[in-house]
Image (cartoon, rainbow, N blue to C red; front, top):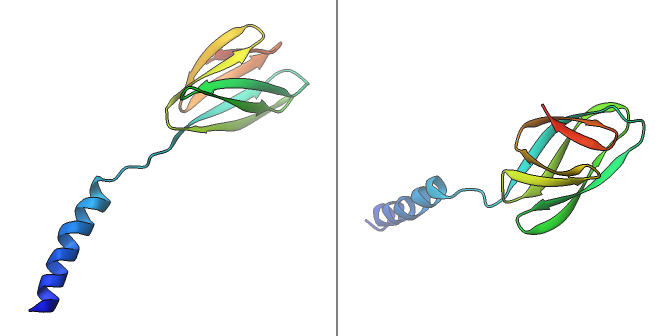
Amino acid sequence: MKKALLLVTLFSVTIPTVLLSSPSLASVYMKYYNKDSNKHVMKVQMDGSTKEVTFNGSTTGAATIQGSGKNAVIETSCGKVEVKDDSKIEIKDGCIKVL
């Protein structure tokens, strides 16, 4: 009887907690093509805080900005650009274009 009560208690508490919980962190993942030969380090606004993202020169790659949202604003020399999770971007002359 004690084992049955223990199993019922365990399943009634553990299963809903596991099924209803969600990750508290998200991120913005983007694929990029940097046409510039130099590396760019740009400031990013996300979740009310400032972060940095690095794009290596003359290459394609991917970058992830950690945070709790699915949108981020990247500050470039050409102005601010909003990017969403799974965006594809192109960098030319220090400016970002969302494709």
